Length: 116
Length: 117
Image 1 (spheres, chains in turn orange, blue):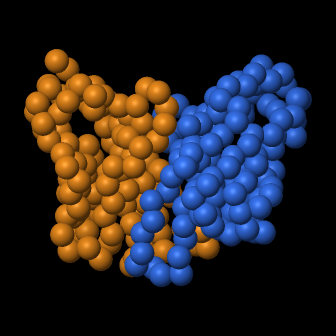
Image 2 (cartoon, rainbow over the protein chains, first blue to last red):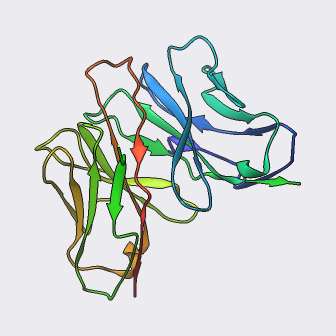
């Protein structure tokens, strides 16, 4: 079974509008972390936001917020007031507490295009 | 402070050739990772090193070997390259603490684009 599922291969949003990128996860660990990374066309991986499984509040970082619904095992990324520079591939990732190095498991990504 | 650096940025190999991808970090991180990124599949873990002196297989280790040379450097070797190893390779590092509740961001290098003909 996929540990991280991103069901939207591509999304379009008008500039200045908000957009939600979906992510669902599967784990039996009680303690885990969820991450979102942005990968622009230049290729680098840019960390955006983190949500811990025990965090009671949804994480926010500037225009990024994470809509964490633990019972549904979803961790959707919300980008408010989209900008042209937000056009990129977005990856959801999970780190489980089991495992010696607690590596990240990534979803397949969502390609976001912001339209002027 | 350069973060995570990778060399080379681009490489073209013929089937059967060998090469080593180099990675170094200057953040005093204890854990280092090698991922590959293929279209439509996200990043998949090849090997990781939880701490200096240890290495372990990830999800897709076949055809690769790694060396944790010291705390800073973690290299990935392809002994006999195959077209299926055409991919973008990312090295990453982080500080892994003993606490289950701490989080530490994983920092990525810029990637190496490898083509095997």
